[in-house]
Image (tube, rainbow, N blue to C red; front, side, top):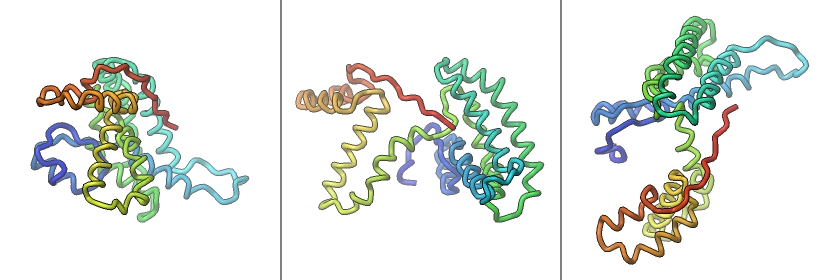
Length: 233
């Protein structure tokens, strides 16, 4: 509640139920993340594989679900360089029919899968989150998942065990500030070292709010780096 207080806009997240209250209270539009739904089917598909690799079996329901989800990602790869308007039109024309087909398949098959199994949990999660998982198709500037945000915080998550023991709260806050600057620079296609150097060279002159705002990554007059394209399997 504190984190999202006064936030307006679109929240893209997993199925954590705690988001419902704050979204309703602050009139926040909530959309789902297909990476979270997909991972559950990946886990189910791995569990369903026979131990004897030579044994021939038909595709499991989890693998069938993954095949349909992957088709949505194929579309996203193909439209990643299109305009916002064209991405919206393509999603309406091609992604929505695939989503409708997938939902119908889920509803038809979910009762034929044992409760408590990984596949059933994946199917139930996807159906329960369906309203939000459809959300990315409502606009062309949204993403199919929040994987970019997850990638931004992954370095922090990987190192947090080593950072549990900051000597002081001020030191921990300073570290968090530095990490935020670096990741925000990367999110705005700036080379982090060049951006930090630019800030250090100009911050002494920033004696007004307007001058400070000019130091923000999206305002800094620095060359953009090439974006890394996220690949989905």
